[in-house]
Image 1 (cartoon, rainbow, N blue to C red):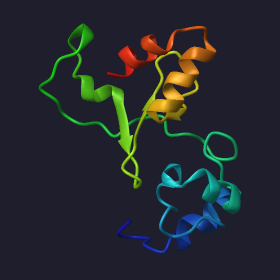
Image 2: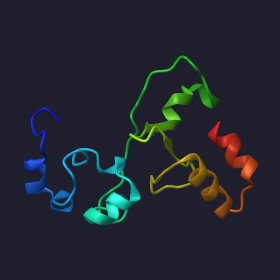
Image 3: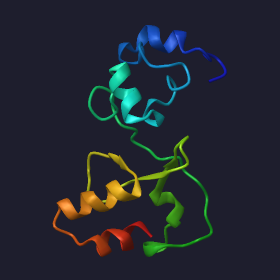
Image 4: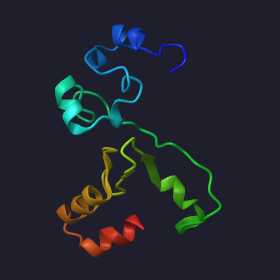
Length: 118
């Protein structure tokens, strides 16, 4: 971030971020699970998960007239898209594989998860 590129200020006032590398201090949800464990800042456990997705405009209309890109959450630094599962009210973000696994944990079929992701 332009005003706090090293994260010095935010680390001073947000103790959960003190051990997070400067590259992720402004977006801790972009860390790998290994980096989260190493820093002690685990998104969704010791640090809150994002409440909002990165909103994008879309001309593609999905179910209910809403742009389908609004359902997409973000592209991580690893290039893998993550989304919030509509049945998970905690706001956890999932890769496609995790998204489908979460659906099957609710008793849904893998094809249901695939269709919901598409």
